[in-house]
Structure formats: C-alpha cells, structure tokens
Image (cartoon, rainbow, N blue to C red; front, top):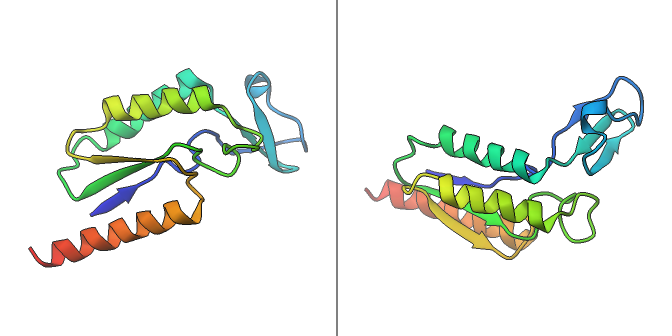
Length: 138
C-alpha cells in the first residue's frame, strides 16, 4: 500500500558554487534561497508537466492499494499563499497533468490544503494506516 504526495515538486534544490548566486539556467525562474548555498528555483509550468508525466511513468505498474493526494494550495511551504514560489497557474498545469497521466489504478484525492498543513498530513497518515489495515484482512 502507498499514499503518494507530490511534496516539494514545484522546486528543485541546487547547491551553489557562490553564495546567493543563481546559476544562469535558472535566473529567469521564480526562486528563493533555502540557505546561502542552497537555491530553490521554481520549475515553470511546462517543466512541471514533464515532472507529472515522469511520475506517472514511474507509477505505471501500480496495481492497487494506492492513493495519490494532491494538495491544491501548494506542494511545499514555498508554494503556498504568501510563499516566495507561489504560482497557482503552474500548480494547476502540474495537477491537471497528474490527473491526466496517472494510472487509472491509483485513486486520486484532491484537497484544498497545502501539503504541509496538519489536516493534510493527518489524512495522508490515516489513509495509509487504513490501507495497511485493510490489507491485513485480505
């Protein structure tokens, strides 16, 4: 059994060779710094669609007892309302690509919460426990 969440999928972590100097490739991306030597550029919508397709590809053989939870208010603390990487249009493109491409054997659950909200985390844990317990009864 598995409960999947695309936590932090909107950004990547880059170790920097110079403090607070973003690599040229990511200078035109929204970004923030996790620390002086770790940058967190946000992926653009088209890049997130590619990420969604790769996630779906890697899950193509999932047969059941799987739930994919989508946190509609952001996949990390950087991407929620007020966060430095907030991009609702990019999130929407990512989530739509997930829903389109994920295997039909995986239950998709959307929640109007951020991935790090306590209510979202609790539901993910409860769903996993439920899947484990139902598997013991089989």
